[in-house]
Length: 198
View 1 (cartoon, rainbow, N blue to C red):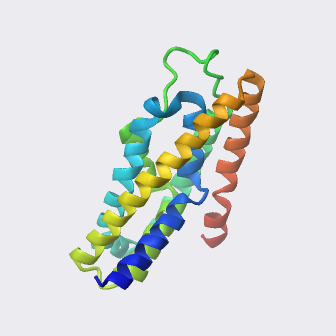
View 2 (cartoon, rainbow, N blue to C red):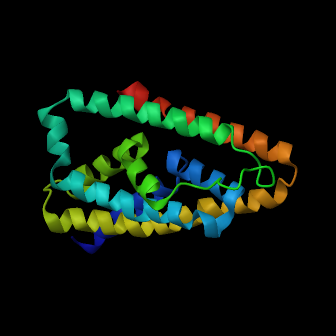
């Protein structure tokens, strides 16, 4: 991959990774409710899980969509169901002081697994493969995966830190409840483009 192509890929990855979407909204909510340290497994699930998804998609999973178009609809239904469940959990999350002792952010595996039902992740991953690894050669797909891992490190850090800073502003439990409900609504709204395209 040439330096010009790598630069274009890095720019594309950073812009698409840092813009609002399901991962970033959930990270901001996690930062506001649990802080940076407790959100680290959630962050790592995205930083590692999304590039793994890109790698597997680039090396063959996209061919499954081409062979079985109905698989795309199955993925869309699963995505909508899972995102509705997550939005409900976010909307009903108690402020830190009122939260039950077992309240916790997404685990590493939950976060990594979420990439497979995240419409924005699929759009970003398939677009990156199409634009920057159209040959689907291992080296090109690896470059896309590695660049997205780096972009994920930046993006997850920014969104969790933003949430953590909002937590300092929202000391009133009522404000945090309102914030959680707004984030749940935005999470649901983030599905609209995928539903319109599907």
